[in-house]
Length: 147
Image (cartoon, rainbow, N blue to C red; front, top):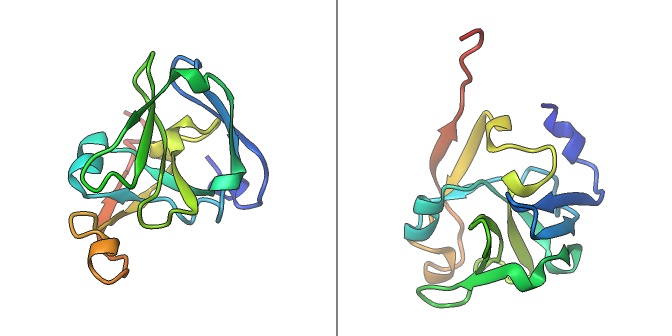
């Protein structure tokens, strides 16, 4: 997969697994914002997220199928498809002007397209530690070629 295809601002289509929820988006900074997080919730969810400004995400089908989950401070709002259970996007606590979108929901994109992803330090959230986002580490994916 050529990830540079996602660098230019353009409208992208996204969907949950069962396609009950469909949405359109324009990435804030291409795939340069791709990340994971090590907070208690994201560690279990395991998704690669990319950033989208609030005004650049539009649910075009299935808004009534979205389920909301909030925890801890309740500031971030995590949305899931109530039919298939897939995490679609969340309002970001660290930047309330943006959504974090599950990269796997974006048409033509997979978490396995990224050879390396930064893992943000979410156990000590930037909003709780002076606003500085820290990288806790890196996750890498190396496919077995020919196996």
